[in-house]
Amino acid sequence: MFTALKDLIQNTDISTIQLHASDYELALKRLLTIYKDSPVYYWNNGYQNLIRLSLIEEKLEYGIAENEDHFDTPLALIQQNKLSTGLYVFDNLLDFHLLTAREKSVRESQIYNCASRLEHKPGVKIILLGEWVQLSPKLRLKLQQIKLGLPKGQEIEQFLKNKLSLQPETKLISACQGLAWGDIHHELDRLFDNNSINDLTDRFLKVKEAKLSNSELNLEYFSKPEIPSAGGNENLSDFLQKLAKLNEPTALRYGIKPPRAMLFVGPPGTGKSLRAKMIARDLGYTLLGISFGDILGADNPDRAVSQLLELAESIGNAILFLDDWDKGLADWESGGAARRIVQKFLTWMQEHNSPVITIATVNRIELLPVELLRRFDDGGIWMIDLPHRGEIFSIFNIYLSKYFPTQFTSSNPATVEETPWTMAQWVELIDEAEECTPIEIGDTVRTCLDDWYCSLPDEERKSDRNSPKIDFDYLLAKVSQINKASVRASESIQAMRNNAWFAKPASKPDTSPFRLPEEALLGGG
Image (cartoon, rainbow, N blue to C red; front, side, top):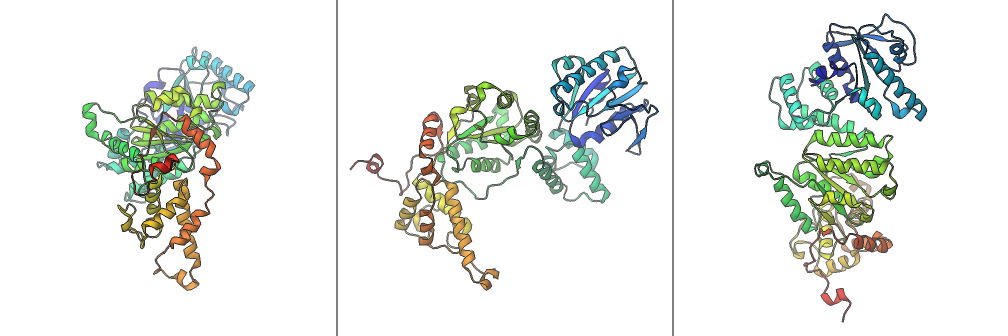
């Protein structure tokens, strides 16, 4: 942990260190250890003068430095040659995103001038800290840049082995991946204070979930599908079975690597997000989901993307799910934040070697530039369309078995006879549900469960002996009342299909007993 820090900072007069917020204390302790024979000073915006740092019994101590000159920033002390021998650690000087263009220009010039002055002042070293360090080309030539990123799996394994004096389980290592060193240290210190190391894995998972859900990325983390299968999409399902085999460790012996990226295109509500969750579940991968709109809406979109990619690589064995990838690309040609973000993803998707599979969804594929579409060639571009009649039968049974398990005992019945309803009833229901999305079907079945519960007398609602029941005619009436999104947006959905003519169909042709006759499809007699 931070093992290379000593070699990096001792070969330069002034350095920048980019680190995670929870790593500040660890970094300061490490610097005090490296410079144990020299004075170490610290400053941030909360101080009007320098602070003398010391390490006493593994705890940071802050004391007033001998130099009590007041200043807005310590850069003035450097320019006036008022720094004595020692290490100076300055925070907040690299927060360029909080400055106006004029203020940023002045600050960069001040740092450049100070770096030049330090070349003639031996014994003084400067470290500038920041959670997000973006230097101008001129400063990059003058300053040594160091990044203390998230730990990788092997680093975590070795650290836990030394700290716990035992070989950590794979689940524990995986739970720590995606956390900063400071988070791992803090949680272990709390456990040791309580003289307990039980349930470490669950504790770290809760810490990670809380941090990610409260981060500026607005990540969807560890989101599991509510149903066992999506229903239909046989072509895509066959490919995913192949994908699972390509992810087996033994495949590496033959130089086989799984696809890096897949793209799902189709109308809203057809289960694109659900498919991504199921892929993550079936592969045993962590799901990191974020919408393109959330990235663009972040206070600093460039920083958000860097954090997201670093997190995905740190976790490893992850599905990076990028929802609504087409949002924000309407102004692609004019540049701006959207173009920078996509370019960063393009470079990363081409060059990364981590076990991360990117799955993106779009509604308007025509907005995606050709260079972006090419990145999905290995995993394929898939059209997830409205379900055909056989798939509607499957989707109904998936949700009916979830909400009404006494009546519908199988979510994947092979024949109509395995359900409580007749073929005629199913044909009538499917006729009514044609052009519904899977989401609309699932919501309607769940509404029937809500209505059943609310119709119970007070005493029965308090009992736990009731089994939910659904009436066919009641469900049929509810389905007939659906204001189908596909009908409201029929022209845009057809345009979507036309623009995605080259995409692979996720579904096979309908061969179920509910399929319409050929002449009915063609409109002939």
